[in-house]
Length: 297
Image (cartoon, rainbow, N blue to C red; front, side, top):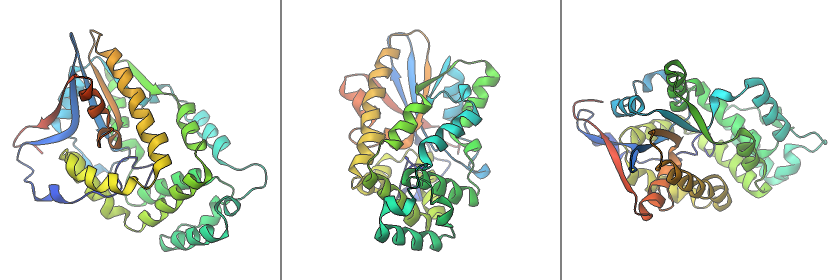
């Protein structure tokens, strides 16, 4: 699953052997500035009710900061206008079909994979492959109880609104749509086929992802996710590595401020050699991964 998990593809179960009452790291980093701290939290964009409460160190970190930053400022989004923007970019208007863009052989492969997970692919025949992939991932995750309204971003967004904390975005919705819509057709085909193939094992995959995420198990995230993602070179460049570099530069500017910030981005951006934490560490910044205290889940 590429988009809903821009985040992990496949996580090892190594963290399962750890006791929940032991101290363990979380997917959260602190970067120390001269007069402030910037905290960097890896997000799971869709969660279930049973995935709460979040680790307490996330809650305590949120309480310490003055400003919340997300990939996009979701507080300023108009839901109707946002949906129209996605449809305008992803729905084909010129008579071209999804089959035309996939080619007969790959479309038939996608059709079979969709049937295996009970997705009627023909309902998406007027869409581009990236849009179809997103819709399929959301449908599959929703079936098993995952809800974007329960994702880490939405949870902390609601708290920030209630607390009157300023909310900012690293990017705009138009930019994010542009990243997807600007992908080559070959990369979009890969995205759609990956979404469908992974869909057959989505519940197990997500259980593994969330377990590793809660335990900040970076080694497991890297060894499984990055090996799988490496074959999607264009997706990795456009959706991950290029953005990581831009964000690392922006974080540097925040370290001269007096206010402290909590930045929430997809967990995929915080693992691997080109991750945001690694880019910041190479600049000589004071950065450390935070931990959940002992005896707390």
